[in-house]
Image (cartoon, rainbow over all chains, first blue to last red; front, side, top):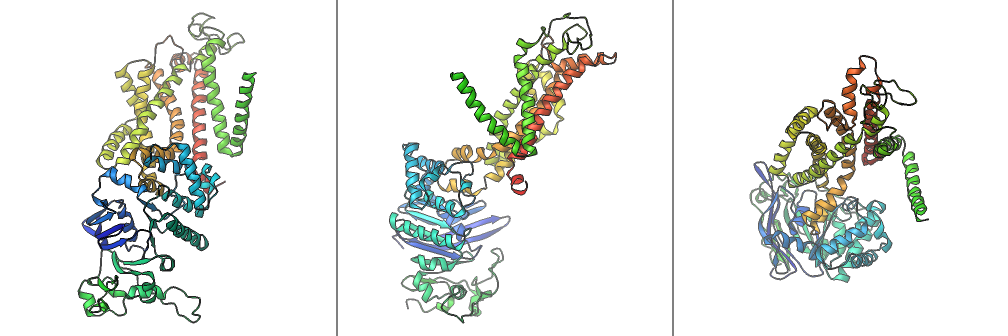
Length: 325
Length: 297
């Protein structure tokens, strides 16, 4: 993967807890093109949020990026100095956080949030100009421009998430990372927010990384999907390939657990068991204790990524020997 | 014309403020009563040079130790000084000292708490150790020792009182910052590329203000009592300046012979002033505490 707007190469993130290290993100490699939507799917604790945060160099303590590279355009993010990285955040790469209820400063008006973000990165802009831009941005995300004079508590959860998104696109970044942007919202608002994100992606031509635990959300909206399990990327493919030809047993299990209104007598299947504790990881394949296809080799040997066809990558021995097909 | 206009606009702002306070229930009333109490004592002290019937320091304005009469409202002390004049002008030192000490506490305690707690690690441990060791001393005794070293005078008194109260500010700020710095909006500001200075000044500090206000008002009452204690044992300023604390210690000897008025009125003033600040602090802490507001009413 030589080209691409954002290139992540064998990234490893560890949390150092006492004597033992917890491997939260293990050897993840992927690239995002301009105006592409990448969906990252995984259960709680699969390392998807840690991966997202490491893209902007904000892995929370005691986490540490132990190896790997992250290139944004031609800059290597992990090697930038503190203030260079700070300049990059907000202007080039933006983050939309999970919880809209607490992601806005309760003592500042909505407009002041915009003024600050804009003026931090463009000190020459006057407050009034910044406020005008804020109004336009709010309009873009479907909020009345007069709301700049409101405090966060005067807005609903959905509106606050829209404000967060408007703030993220304020400086026209080339990539937006949305970490579970709809978890705290109900399904109807969720739909609207996701549509909004996609619409903005089209108008502003930015790339979008959508981190979620809900595969059904990203199936329709992403170009590519990456499935994570216990810190590893287990499958990476175009959305329709994931939907029509899922190859990893875990992805297959996820798909079977999505209800489908057309199949009346469909039986919803759950994946047995729960994800492993990252401190007591099973040997060999991470998924074998829950996998119905597991055989002897899975229990003994680490599974490499198999590149099956056109970049459809799967971390499963079932695909061994099927590479290129 | 303009003056009446200004007066009217101030009134029109003040009256809804007062009524809305009164509507907030008991806490609102506490704040209101406390504010009226403290403000009236402060105003009385400020205007005392013009309204006091006699020079508060002049001796032999009447016979010594006269009980309260219509001529000498609060009686006279052993040197024939008018107690009423002394009472209304005697708060000056105490107010100056306590206001100054609260300001000093504020200027040192708040930024130190912000910095220490946001930096964390060894720096935080170091400052915490210092603050805890100051806190471990009995307050008044430490203040006496400091006042002895520093000497008399308003500024020295204020400094020695400030030292014993800085840890309370530091601790409150520190604990607030510890929880606020983990809030998503601080993380979001970080992710948007805000500088550390910006995050401290615009995100963390404004969110700690409610608790700082509460500490400051409660602290005021404490500072007044400590200042009274210091002047009572003669650590105050020059004896020619009227002062409640001095009058208290003077009246203590006279009380045994039945001259209660020399000690009663200055003591009452100290109590009222401290009570006013305490009421205000208690009320404010209830009004500004979002957790109480959510659960109750």
